[in-house]
Image (cartoon, rainbow, N blue to C red; front, side, top):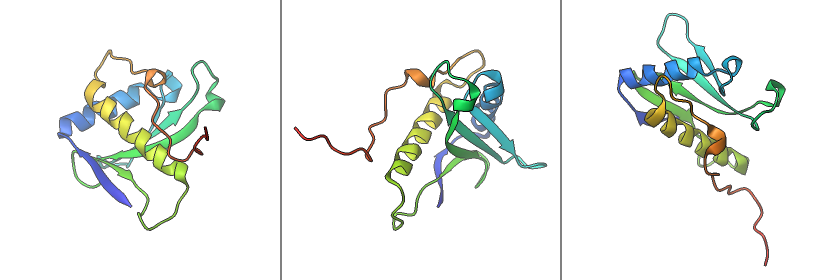
Length: 131
């Protein structure tokens, strides 16, 4: 299910898009950007990788979309609440939300986001430890 996560100005959407384009995997960042030819619609894949690991270790964490539903919208795909999907999927959606929030706040030219320094998102799919 495709839902709006955040509505921003068109300028902020382009600022975030420009940041992701400047910080692709090829440039040492974590993003892959795919744009619809002739349209201002973009999919940004956020990758996860341990620090100082080769590119082969990168794994897609999830994706978000810019201007897919309307200009200035940042949307994500969430699981249907009636679908019993993998519990790890909820963790990935939470991680993508955290990345979007950080990009909105900090994605400016000259600023370098380090996602390895972020606090861990509590995982709901891990078994509880017994005492």
